[in-house]
Image (tube, rainbow, N blue to C red; front, side, top):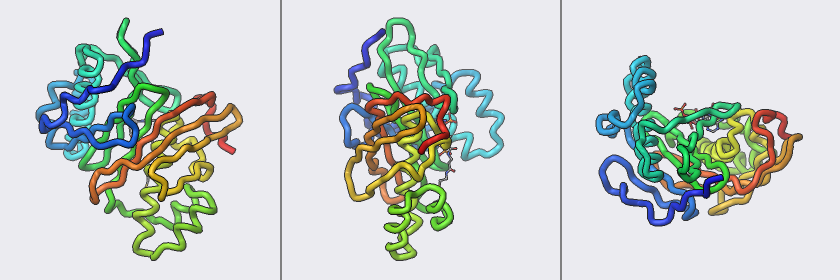
Length: 250
Ligand SMILES: CC(C)(COP(=O)(O)OP(=O)(O)OC[C@H]1O[C@@H](n2cnc3c(N)ncnc32)[C@H](O)[C@@H]1OP(=O)(O)O)[C@@H](O)C(=O)NCCC(=O)NCCS
């Protein structure tokens, strides 16, 4: 089995005006931000099948963000692995999580992507699964309804103790943390988010996720993306969960 890739010092793309590397709590995780205006530059990096997929998208903003995110992902993967970006094959797990089919002899590199209308984040990691989530801070959410579906009883109480005007933003911070955990595990929305307990005051958290197939440990932390967005990233430390059987969290 090939060794995990050494990310140390791999920052030469920073400051090229297309991608921006964000400060991240863990040195073994690299988080890159990409904005839709980068689509023109990054179009050259996407595969023909992705170009066809983009052309089918009717919504211009969504199309630009898709091209920028896919182009940035291939550019980064090719750069980190020293491979031709267009030759890289991406496969999907049982709940749709994309992962790289490492080219022969290449090191293993985990990644995850999240996008909202005007920004995408790409997380690259060297160990286990990685997950990332970004949401616009002005996203309209029914915090009371979603809190009942996604937050534990203790989290709901802490949310209700906040002034009404702060609740949507707080909910979105809970959400990005939980989604980053779920994405690190590849479970997507099949995981019961109420079973993931988040302390928003902790800079980094160790979360234990259990279901009938096993147990996983994940580190999750906030990513600073500016006041306009909320974001979080997660790294799976160990997991013997069966992603194909997810959905039975207890
Ligand atoms: C698909 C899902 C994993 C993320 O969806 P999302 O938040 O809408 O979108 P994001 O931009 O954060 O993530 C999408 C990307 O995650 C990746 N992804 C897809 N399935 C995944 C999975 N099971 N695990 C990890 N990553 C996954 C893909 O790269 C996808 O991008 P692509 O479709 O362009 O390839 C899933 O959790 C979902 O549908 N979430 C619902 C979102 C929602 O209801 N939000 C309301 C919150 S207020």
